[in-house]
Image (cartoon, rainbow, N blue to C red; front, side):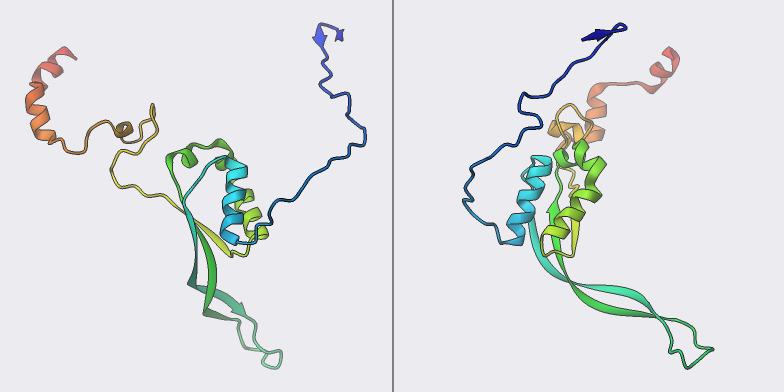
Length: 169
C-alpha cells in the first residue's frame, strides 16, 4: 500500500496469529556446564572459542554490621576467601570485533552464569606479538612479517635520508 508517498509493506506470514503445532524430538540433554557454556556462546556469537572451567580461590570483602547492643561500634570490613567456579574463555580477534559481543557482553555473560553452574566468567585476550590480527585490520600487520626482521637493517637497506624528507615537506 502506498499512502502519501510512503510505502507500507506487510511482512507477516500467512500463519501469523495462528496456533501452530510442532513435532520435535529431544535428542540429547546437555548436563555438563562446559558444554552448556560452549553451546550458549556459539548460539549467541556463532564462534567456537576455547574455554575451560576451574575452581579458583577468590578474596571477597563484605561489610559486617555490629551488634545492636553496642551503640558506638562501627561496621567492620571482613575479607574472606571463597571458592568460585570460573569459566575461562580465550578471546580471539573474531570475538574482539564481534558487534553483538561488544554491545551485549554483560547480558550474554549473565545468561551463561544463570543457566550454568559457574560463578563468574573471565575472558582472556592473549597478545604475544605473533601478528594474529584479522586480515585487513591493523592487528599486527595481519601476520605479514615483522617477526624476524631487524628494523635497523631494514632502514639501512631502504636508503632513506631524513634531511631529504624534511626538505620535501
